[in-house]
Amino acid sequence: MITIPRWLLLLLGALFSGYHVVLGIYSLDIPASPLPTIAALAVYTLATVLSLWPGKRMRMPDWLAAFDLAVAIVLPLLVTSQLDPDVDNGYATWYVAAVGTLMTIAAARRQLLVAWVGVIALTVQTVVWAGPLALAALGVIGSIVWVAIAHTLTSALTSAGRETRRYAQAEREAAAWQAAQDAHLFEGRMRLNQTERLAAPMLRRIADRDGQLTDTQRDECRTLEAAIRDEIRGRMLLTDVVRAEVRRARERGIVVTLLDEGGIDDLDEAARDRVLSHLAEAIAASNADRIIARTAAVTSAAAVTVVGLVDPPGDAAETDEAEVELWLEIPRLHQPGDLEATSANPGE
Image 1 (cartoon, helix red, strand yellow):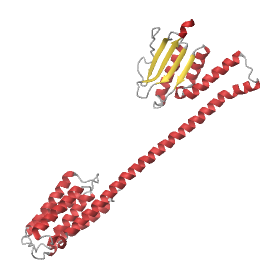
Image 2 (cartoon, rainbow, N blue to C red):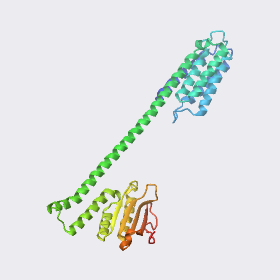
Image 3 (cartoon, rainbow, N blue to C red):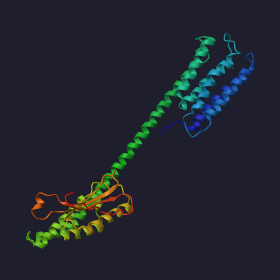
Image 4 (tube, helix red, strand yellow):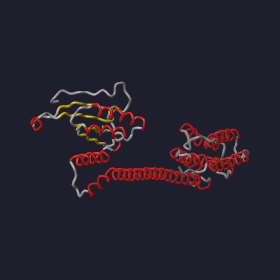
């Protein structure tokens, strides 16, 4: 966030405010009675010290802004009550620059409405007390200009800070996108290397035999093809234990389908290992003809859903639905008995 350096704001405010206090003390012999001027100096000094006191927030608290506004309204009334508007009062009109300085500090600390109300009140009081021509003679216009400059700088710095935060957010998002792309590229290369490692020996064997394979070798190719398909579609569902149980299930004649749609990408390593261990146990214990394991949606309480189907015998397979032998929802969070499967009645 871009802001005016705090030490510079404090130094300038203190110097200007101290100068006005010195002028007020120097001109105490001009007012008819010095007491209202002394009271004005006291409240102005208090308001300045409170306004310049270092704090955690750049924006001035509302209660302090209200106090500064009250001082800006009361200060001219106190001082001018003992001055003659028809004569040259010299430095006795120190309150004009003092109010301008106090309202400039309020504007710099993002109390713009208070700052403008303060200088408008000063303008109205000056016109009522000494007439419109006194606005230039007493320096009221200069106070308005200082508040306008502070308003412009504050608005510009706020806008620049907002743009800086927006650009920083965009940079973080771009870095995250690049990291995701690098991760996808790395995963793709890893999957490609895994596929090459699995398929290369069998492809060489097929080439050496000119495609003339025995039934056993054809079964081996089909198993290898399914394993490669698992690597592509199964993604995060695959561990060495899951691969081994899927291979054993296929050797028993079970058709196994693994579908990872990103539902477990957000799980940590421990939770994912627990879920996949339960998946491997479910595959090992099933006697279904077909097993489908699919990751659930990220918003679901379940991490993986496992369905085991038993095909009806004979020609009934063409008309009747398969029987659900296994229905298992493995939860994302550890729960007692979270490996219990639900068996369905035939035809459900």
